[in-house]
Image (cartoon, rainbow, N blue to C red; front, side, top):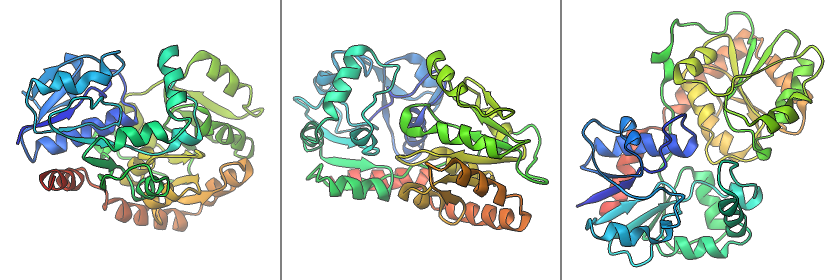
Length: 356
């Protein structure tokens, strides 16, 4: 079987959620079977197995994207896996697996800011109705999603007639990046947020909660554009400590998590919640929004609260000053998160492909 995997979603600066999913799943799949990776930039190879077989075609943002299948036909793949649903399927002569991570942008239609004006307009039009999504998904052979929560949402929306399988996201163990092994000694003094700053991520609640948490620091790790940073800085309560890091390396991320920290997110929608999973693997307690997907990923290893209530967020964070509660939460989180594993996800995907 000639199996092709679309790795054009791998970023060459800092991973985002799609980039991380593409990288980890692609590597896990390559450990099980020969894979030819589809790239748009040779720099993406550094995130893939040494000596990986690959081809290079246009970028995912190219006007050629609707015709990607016609480009791939000449390489005679048997199956092509795309870790997103945007690959053009016109005229394909192979089995096609598309991935729909979640339905977030049907509810929150603001597109990623890094895209061009034309792409942002197309994004909004695409998500204004389920019809375009149904047409695209029904032209594939198999649909992948990343959680049971997302699978149920796709079924409820009647988005596809094709079979749907869960190829779960999973967390890396960041502990090998640590300069020293340190964890909460007295009470969590650092609040760690890893994620974007688009509106539904609701970072506003985290910033406002700092008004009830004197002596602690909120660390906002991801890159942020100047305009959005200015908006959020205006919300910082008097005497509160909020640090905008503007992007961090894996090593910096791991060491911040290991420094008397609690992972926080007041997001109103998630496809999986990878930062939550990464925190639980490292034994870092978490306080997050009360969402179905966070409960699926966090189990009994996190505290859940109202994302629109800054004071409630602060109160739940303060609960972690209780060492007994904190230790119980950490142990339950470590046990629960073991159910999500890249090797198992890749095997599930490969088994499903072989049944096509």
